[in-house]
Figure 1: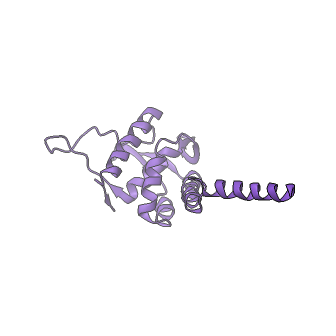
Figure 2: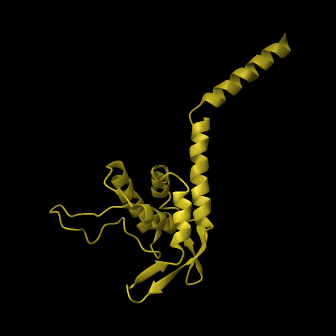
Figure 3: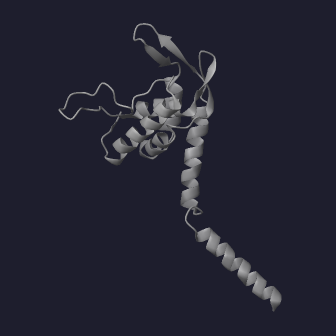
Length: 161
């Protein structure tokens, strides 16, 4: 009888844990998508090089990033990419021989699938929107860019490319 009670409590405990938010198969699937995109971006390689003509850094392997984000549904990838813009993890991608933060590649991939043109209250194009960052962005700039893109995503102000 005591063994039966223990078994019933174990089953009840298992069912409770399995039905908790965050433990569902759907949540685990979303977590796996996020991990797979993040891992793929982190391992993408390539490098940022200075382009004298445009006076900005250029990523050497945009095709690889396209493969990563287009292997997922763009609508599923978009919030994942916005969420990781502030990720400071080092990647295999280099700038001047040093690892680039994962957030930089999340931003690079994001801007390859979605576009947003910020405007000033009067309708003119904004020259200083925090959502635009460079590969040498600071952690604070990454955080500001994430916040800016979260607002764009929330208000559906972007277009897919």
